[in-house]
Image 1: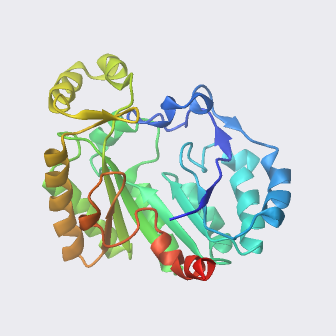
Image 2: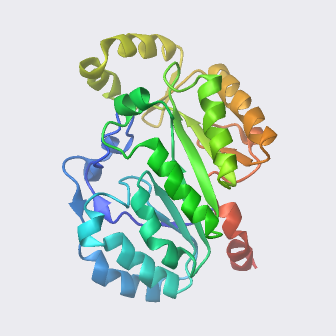
Length: 278
């Protein structure tokens, strides 16, 4: 669905996830850079932008970087946009997101937390500097308790790393317990250079993934896992999600038949979009 997007920070995210796709884009390489001018520019942007579609924070660098504690750029943008009635779509891995619950309650807001594993060793491997999964779940529970719609993004699912049925079931079960409404999932789509980087991190994993992706295909600069393999993993996950009575969506997978909702959470901002379509 149509929406706007704001990245309050440029450069490589401080979480340093090994699967990061943003390194494909020049603006999101190198150190994290705060876009300080946004704290002033956002006022004019909000006043001059029509229609008031949902605004995503963010599609590349996490809007709740450690630097956000100091610079509060995301906070300022949320203040202005919520006061102008823009719906908000938050995507993060940081518990700092709970700081802005007051703003989320001003307007239609959906908070998505990326949680790829509950295994501490796996998390340290694939998301070495991100907050622990337990802290993310705790933050999401606080937000859900305030009546703000929440999603868990199991994104990406990395074959043989976090694709085990028991592992995925645990994430979905915990999500259901704290009041999450939707699970969005996607299989890892490596960008060029990923396998070379992985060589210095875990040579055994490199060999395993290289073999698994050997019969995949490159699409728009991303290496897609073989279609049948993707469908099997996602179909299995979907069964678990529906069993817990949550909505389910895949992201950039080409399997619309699996979806019961929109992947980015705009199903919960539907009223705004229906008004726009009139």
